[in-house]
Image 1: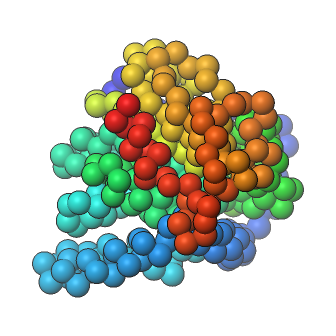
Image 2 (image 1 turned 60 degrees about the horizontal axis):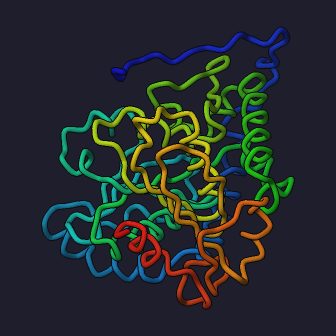
Length: 333
């Protein structure tokens, strides 16, 4: 299916409340503050020290060659930015990081690295560029392959769900359905506010809106982005790696794909096993023996392997999951 501007507008609700909407500028600082809080959690769950050390050692060489320094993606503005992005990370090849803020721009890119990447990752709820990049860097280092990190956008719907405890205990169906319901309600009543954190998912070829406010097609912004990448890329992705609720977002993205698009696909989950019900997909699922958070969210789905770890992938906080090694094991299977 060719990429084009086929965005759809859902039927307007009978009593729109757009005239009473708060200005976006009044809401965004609070969303940024919540995003920054989740960035601090990234320091617990992902190998941020290795990422920072690696970028620090490469910045000077990139600046000397007139290239943008890799560390730009984890500066303070990036850590609090509620918008999502695509980070193409290659631990073995300069300039190491390419950033895209538009899905269609990425899909149309003439650069070979955007067409050749076969691995994509999604991290947990609210993770910023810091956690997403650290997780992808770990996997790229281990597999010696480029990795496309989907940085989840963080909007008002995410703030509300996190306040309700959605970070801890929603199952797959409930979590994604409630998230869609909240986002749809925001789009109906406050479309400008609903846009916060949704620029990346709104740039997918099949994005939908209500009153101009974006709504989810597949349960979450990251799921929408991943579904578009799987659906429209000429070369299909080969390996998807999700940590925590990133695994749920991968599962929702692949449910409605055609068998031609899922045949031979490998899915690795860490800290949140999902149902193995998509034809043609091979699952490699790891859950820690000491991972109370992951076990709370497993909802009857069993892992392929129990590992002696907790929820973190940061080796500075043992016993942590060796994310790179587990992904490499699946890639080499």
